[in-house]
Image 1 (cartoon, one colour):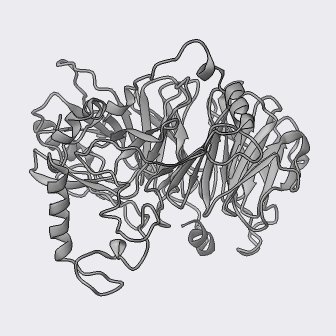
Image 2 (cartoon, rainbow, N blue to C red):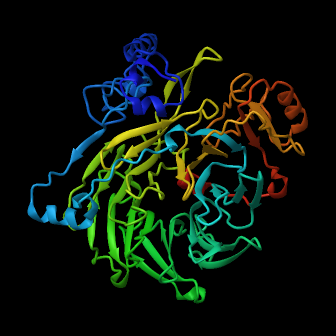
Image 3 (cartoon, rainbow, N blue to C red):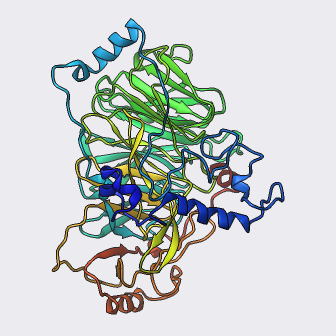
Amino acid sequence: MSSSGEESNPTASSLSIGRPVASNPQVYRNRMLVRLASSTCRLCRLSGHWSIDCPKKPCFICRKAGHTATLCPYRTIPGEPFRNKNVASTPDNSILKHITHRESNPTTFGRRKYPDVKTKQGSLQVLKAILRLHLRRVTALEFHPQQPDLVISGDKRGILAMWNFENNQYNVNSSAHMFLIHGIAFDPNDGNRIFTASADGTLLTHDLTTNLHTLLLDTNPDGWQGPNSWSMLCSVAYNSDHHTTLVGDNFGNIYMTDDRMPQSSSIRILAHKKKTKVTGIDVHPKESNLILTCGNDRFLYLWDARMFSSDLQLAQFEHPRVVNSAYFSPIYGSKILSTCQDNRLRIWDNVQQDLKVSREIIHSHDFNRYLSPFKAVWDPKDWKEDLILCGRYIGEEYYDPKTQSMIRLHPIDLYSASRGEIVAELVDFNVPTISPLNKFHPTLDKIISGTSYNLFLWEEEVRDENKTRQVTDGKSCVTSFYEDRAELEESDSDSSFGNYPGKRPFSRGSGSWEEESTAQKKSLKSSHFIAFQVPDHAQYKQRRKVSKELEDDDG
């Protein structure tokens, strides 16, 4: 599909998915202003704007005064060409920085200039999904690095789930953790073993073949003693060279656990400010002694694992607000990407003590307490270490030609780290919810998104007239993508269970999927289908009661 705004940018025209509200961006702005004129702000009690766009406070997106979020120059408008959103760049005017950049990026100064690699992932669509795989919102999500058709996810109730999207099979482990799963890590030397860190203070290793788990670390051996003393594990990473699992807690500590030793051999180090969460840990892909950590003390630290001490950081980078995540670039580790709650994605091209941030990308990902934190990630397949991915909080209205109405969608943005530009935005009318968790497939052109209780798989559509999907055992429902598509209206918060994609809201345990599937099967008129799979939660319906203090703290 194309529009006047997209024709001026051939890259955008080939990557856009949804049809914009209007071919002219000015028409879109005029429509927004008409809607604003009839609204009343809850803060200043004046008409003409919403509370989120109140001029008495800074813009929600760029944090600058003088305009609202609706008219923010860094807001992506449907139909407009993708614009450069790079707002800061470090001048390379010193000999030291020039030499550092040259030695860290030898191909840039080599004989050949490599062309930009066009990604196919900007034209992906949601062709597979599994609904209500979890009872609460998804908090951790990963592709298996060695099994290309397996996705592993964790939720707020401590449930660990595995979904094989090629065979439409799933497995749920409800006995692993009691509370929220904050992170999932893999052992590259053993594809059947994974590590999970939870808010119940335990670090577990799971065997995927036997579906059994082993306790590696318990930071609360005496049980519940109150919210002030309860330790929660908030991040996890695995160092395969040292056979060491690193986890961070909510008191600023980092635990180093050797999986070959007994549980009592763990080492605890105060890495961040006391009583602050360590929100992210990452290990350098080439030099395993380099460790990257971040936390809600607003700092990002670079460590040497051989000299792990609170006053021996190799480098530190301060942020204005909480840092949700920080990652080395996946292949060479020459770059660092951080996600901060000030609506900025920050990229460092070179890891150096006093090197300032190379680029800051303004991006809407400041979230409320009922969403999982947004985390920008690298594409592990990109040998240029340039493509990054992050979900967007503030949505835009797109025009659906089939229903002839505007639908608010929350795109998933793909950025170029070297240029600070948005490369593509993924939108799908079957996914109207916010997608805070998104991950690239390690080897294929696929993306997995976790939104609320569901998982959506973005992949390239293969045109095949003979391609059909059958309903089996009342577990899956096939719906038309265009002709008789039923909108998936679902809340992103934890207060409701949402609706299934059918003619009526389908509550858990209150009906039969066979009736719903039969009605949908008769209404198929298109060759473009989306397969929804719905698990049965009767096997783990009985869960332990989560304490009110932890619910409020993790919200």
